[in-house]
Amino acid sequence: MKYALILPDGAADEPIPALNDQTPLQAAKLPHMDWIAANGRVGTVRTVPAGFVPGSDVATLSVVGYDVTRCYTGRAPLEAVARRITLEPDALVFRCNLVTIADGRMVDFSAGHISQAEAEKLIADLQAAIGSDRIRFYPGVSYRHLMTLRDADWMKVEATPPHDIPGEPVGSYLPAGKGSDVIRSIMAKAAEVLENHEVNQVRRDLGENPATAIWLWGHGPMPRIEPFRTKFGLTGAGITGVDLFRGVVLSAGWRLIEVPGATGYLDTNYKGKGEAAVKAIDEVDIVAVHVEAPDEAGHNGDVVAKVKALERIDELVVGPVLDKLRSLADWRIMVAPDHPTPCAKRTHTDTPPPFCMAGRGILPDRATEFNESAAAESDLHIDPGYELMEYFLKAGRKG
Image (tube, rainbow, N blue to C red; front, side, top):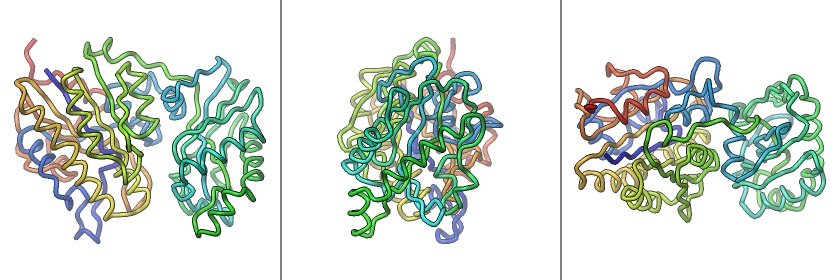
């Protein structure tokens, strides 16, 4: 049996007046996802357990089959795995966003989706100015970076994701709890370094959002994740443009497939991801393709971009993968957004997102299309979310 999992990050949404009170999934032309729904099953899945923040880290781990109440240690640790960063036992790793704060408010959690070259210069200069034997900054992609802090295992810091507070006064959301004074101090020193940095002077001159600050969050020690092959007896491969899912892939013991032009943004190489997935189907038992674009559109509040991203995923990823699988005898495919990122809210919610699956042994229900409404009408609602993977792999199979 061959399996394919497509994760359109943040694809689920809410009815939008500009779309005649439809969601982006309803408004988009998605013939391949609709085929899966019509020839298989749709349902909803609670990817975020009670008490957890609805982040892509928690939700994606759930979709891939892991109980986050047992294995989750934070978002940044997964990204550290992606970058092959090793932590000392007393260390924590933090996600380090380059952000734009003006008049005390979170203007832009991505600093205008700052370019790679600009970001690397800023992170290098932060390391030179603030870095030490205890503190180290690691460059990532665009606005997404990491910071490690030694002698930190005693800390009990609470931190808010910056994408959860667009336009909000940041004073109410600064790190709190035991040891938070250390984190606030690092953030304050970084703001001093960044304020008049040459990169930001150029960005201001060009009318672009400057990276005026860093925002530290998503911290924890290294994750504790059982290899997927040990858990389910299957080999796997993953394709993505973001470090978070790279970390999930590597932590699960899957092969990481890098695709040129996979940016983790709206301009990602959809076609390349689809082609890489088709090739990987011949090489492993399960291939997972993660596409960040719908989530980014949701955070931007860009309805048109979200619809377009979904249509490109359907055409250039789901379509080729489905065509490949249908040429085989034994196969299954699942499309499963990790969480909603409603354009109106511009942040994640914990509402159970829809999924659809089809293939050998999966008996069709009455759905004819893939969207939130069709899934809500189904009698298939999976909770806890980590059970979705076992259902996908084993439901309806004998033995």
